[in-house]
Image 1 (cartoon, rainbow, N blue to C red):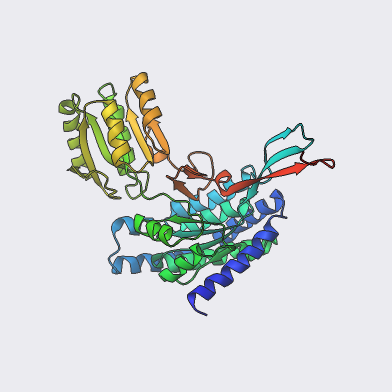
Image 2 (cartoon, helix red, strand yellow):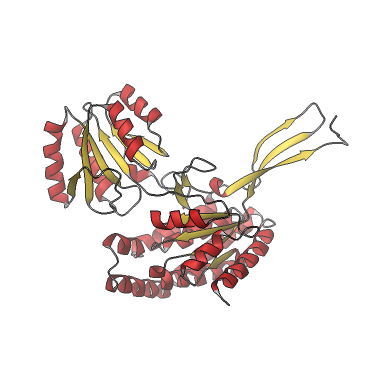
Length: 402
């Protein structure tokens, strides 16, 4: 079969699995998640070996350090991945939740109820843990999912796919509720986003180039975030020790993450005092400071620096040059903080807290399927609720419209 035929078969199988998933109660889905966690642990040697091969090949092929970091399944990340599956099993099931209900004078009773999307396609790069996080969230919300990873993680994703499907089979859920696209050519991505009537929504998790290509080719809805150009604004009413601690965490803890800070804004009257501290910190932590690199996502130990007159100019700068992802103000002035929180047009805005908190697990969602910078349907970290839609159930007693 050619690539288009392979994708069509996967989509048909996913549609059939999604229809079956609607019938499974929460208890069955939770049992499947626990079985998947056990299967992942049992297959850890095979998964580790596959990931080691992917990492070695990535380094040999000159993949950037940031991408290699995303690709690597460390012991801590593997444990976090498995713990995330178990945590999703403990979360409330949104499917069937009544959002509201009301009686109308016409004699009808209307109930608005959460429902699964049906079939979701997720295209991701580098991070193999995305495969498991996504599968867990989609299964808990009674969706079927088709995953297509990047060529750099093909061995890791295949090993994870075997474990996830083994867990589904053991629990008696349809194994085709989770499927991996094993071909990595671009035609597969195009075929996924053009599967009208079979796939309900596509979610890209990768660089801006991938996301734009998917949006341009798509005939189905695409839920996305383009990039993570996150800012830390240090106001002249800030605690400077706190500001350096937040900046350090936002930039250095994991610079390859989309919620890492890429730009530091400093109030101009504070700059003579604070910038020497920043330069000493940067030298100590190996951070390269830049000026004038507005709108750049480094994903490395690089940081753009600019001065602004005050909070109003900081807000305008962020809205003009940011990616509407995560932005922070450090200040002890409550009025300025409230202005920043109100007027910065980003999915998450912070007051005296690191941008690194923008994460489904940190928000109590369990694993996340991505962080949306869109404004329709979902914004910010996308957990279980964001993987559902809704429908209206209307009951009457022979009611007719007059």
